[in-house]
Length: 167
Image (tube, rainbow, N blue to C red; front, top):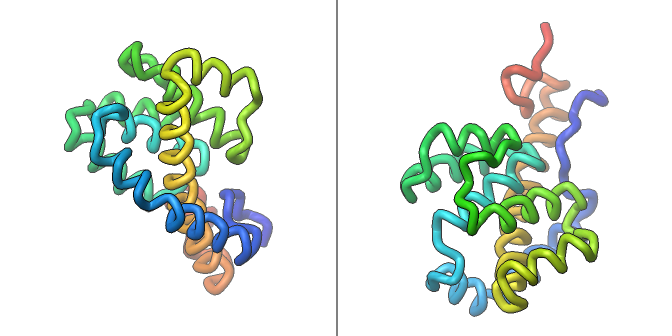
């Protein structure tokens, strides 16, 4: 059963570390989600970019609805979920591209990408972006881990998007 290709948690320890990070930073997280330094639409674009890289069907569904509620067009949402950012506002593009890179690098972006993020938004906002990305990664990997368990207990019949099923 090697057909499951999504990123998942590799250990319970890794999952607990992510939950612990969120718990320890809950005050900062509330502040980030209550401020306008990262507008709700900007956060949703970044979350969709990470979700696209991690291929979490649950998060894709949830954040599609949230993005549409924030006024992001269906066309732009669909494009982001395909890895295309041509409709992204120019002042948010650096953050969205960084979010995709961050996810592709498994949360360990290269120094050049991090430097560009800081140059574009400043140290404080860059730190807030990293927190937002860690939150969505936790959601993505949790959803994908659930899908993997479904895949395993069903002998490959559940847990994959419909298009991935063969036969």
